[in-house]
Length: 303
Image (cartoon, rainbow, N blue to C red; front, side):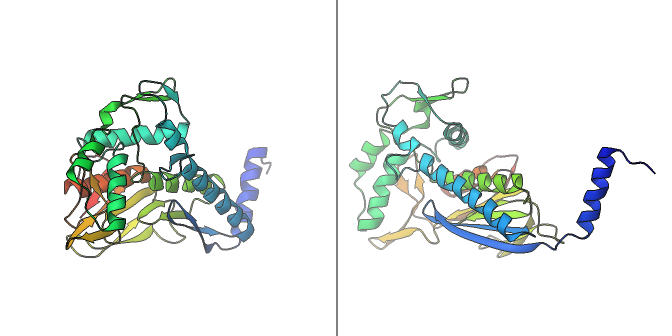
């Protein structure tokens, strides 16, 4: 029997696979974006897996340098220093995340608003000082917000704002996007059986060997604790279980309703499953604000 070069290559690959080393579960953790990013993957070669994970973490670090509103030198922070009405060319990543954020802002009628940075900063300070912001301060901050005041030009990959000094906040989308980008690198390096976790945001790849998916615990929900088996999707949980402050005997969440500038005072928790981790991240925050799921054909919700 004579085999063509292509068929011979497939034959050799199959033969090598039969004797391949078993895949081992490996985990790597690094701090980024104010939380811990955890990579879990299955590999037969530890040094190669470590190198791929280092590359994935480097991608997360680079995105933090672009999308952070805490860092004055980030691309996001520098964008808002330009004059109102000026078209500003931006990176592919910033444009992509901003466009996705504006889509959610529009679909929620502004309950979730990527321009809510001024209000978010006021409430950050309130949680530190345990002192409620004045209504005048909130109204002043709201005057500098509004997703309708941002325009995008996809052809030029440019952004312009209608209000001087607007402050954008990617806190509800950046970790989800970074997780899915890290997972993308792991896949490109030959590790499809991987999961990237960033606090409550997960990017899931192919399942662990011998399973149908990654086992994800959702707790709490209306029906109690649930265990889901998922693969190739994004999962995000949003709520105030760990991020809240008690001021004047009342509990205030870190989640801000951009329509009125108020922190949520009702405890809520939402988990969203979507095709993309970034979408799950933004939709989970929006659903917490609205108190109900948003119409989205590619997302599942658990309250």
